[in-house]
Image 1 (tube, rainbow, N blue to C red):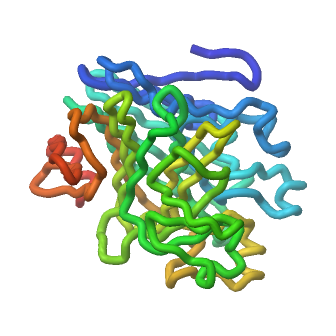
Image 2 (tube, helix red, strand yellow):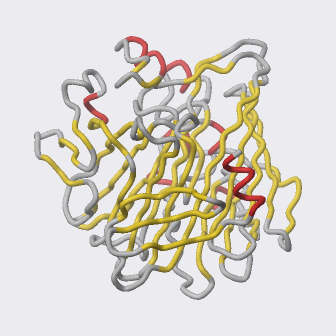
Amino acid sequence: MSLPGKTKLVARTIHNARASLTINAFGGALIDFHLRDSKINPLSFRFTEDQMPVNNKSGAPYQGHFLCLGRWGGPSVGEVKAGVPDHGHLANIMWTCSSTDEDQGTLNMHAESKLEGLKIDRTIQMDARLGLYLVTELVVNINPLGRLYNMVQHPTIAAPFLKNNMRIQCNASKGFHYKNYHDPEKNASNWPYGIEEDKTINDLRFCDRGVSSVFSFIVDEKSRLGWITAYSPDAKLLIGYLWLRQDYPWINLWKDWDKGNIRYCGLEFGTTGIHQPFMEILAQNKATVFNINTFQYIDAGERVHRRYLSFLAETPDDFGEIESVFIRDGSLFIRSHKSDLLMELTSEAIRNFDE
């Protein structure tokens, strides 16, 4: 389906008997992931044109799960004048779908940005039976010079899945409020607690109170994998993401409130926890925070692979707080304090992810 102008929707859908995933080629965002029985789409988030930054209005809106590639947050003053949008140009332009095999649940797509000097090849593979898919992405520097860059996955949940009784869990450790990037170590807290601007301590697992803000945490240093989940007691649904910590060592939790109710919640994970242009990161001497890099370098012609899994599953009535998410013997385990929810991956998916 295609609509004219800035509301353009060029949809591609892959599915199995259990779940369906829709991707908008305009911006490359994953915009609908639902189980066929429930029809509830956690990725219903979408900004209007008025909500978009001025330098993004000519392109795709922020929606669903989009990719921030090149940068996370705003560009520098000079880059804005050159036409670079917030969160990277690749989330703002049309992607090409080179092949789709709905029977096999696979989609191949790619995009190239001369503004960023980067191109990306993405393959999405839906599990044969479950509400689960694997994304592999190859980033290539097409310029003759190396550059600093960041890559942040930006899945954002919204109503009707997101309500004030939503529960968030992840394997984060130390973190800080995004406005304290000048001195994150001095203003650090440990998950699940975040220190707001007014010094209020907020339990970030809950969504029943708070102010609009972003908290950035490093993934637990002892873990090989990073993970984040959002659980809806009303819908009895759990959505989650799993990735290699070496690919994405940061978790960025964005909560947006409107009239006392939570409106958006970003379950972000990526290569940085500082929401600033590179020149500001360098000026503040914040190339590392908590001994973890806050940006990456990609050399001329270099090729970088990253991957992640996403899952959506129904939960039992007594499903409690998430304790851990892990892979063992070809199966993905989501363990709560009260019960174990087991999802079995196909051998091909686990091989591709856990190689």
